[in-house]
Image (cartoon, rainbow, N blue to C red; front, top):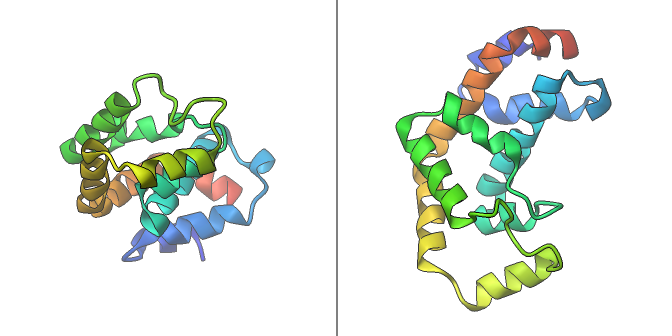
Length: 149
C-alpha cells in the first residue's frame, strides 16, 4: 500500500503504523522516527487505555513527540495534551526507580479522578487525535515517500 492510498483510507493511522513497522528505525528520516513514537503512544491509548500507554513508556517519560499534538491538533486535542502534561509536571509518568508494574498496581489500587477524566477524554478526541496524526503525515509526505516507496 502506498502513502497516498493510506492517506485516502477511512482510518489511515493503523495503516501508517503498519507501513512504518516494516522499516528499521535507523533507516527512517528523523521526522518519521518522531512520528513512529506518536503512533506507538496513540496505539497504546486506543489498544489498552491511557494507563496502558503510560505503563508501556519504556523510561517513564511522556513521549516528546506527543507534543506534536500542539501544532497539529484541534483545540480539543491541544487542551487534552496540555492537561496530560499538567498532570505529570515533571514530564515523567512514574518515578525513575518505580517499575511500570508498580505504577500500574498503584493506579489500579487507587484510581485518580483527574486521571480518569483524562482517560475518558482521550476517547472523546480519538478521531481528532487521528486527524492530527494524519496532518503530520501530510506535512512530511516527502519523507514518507522516501522511506516507504
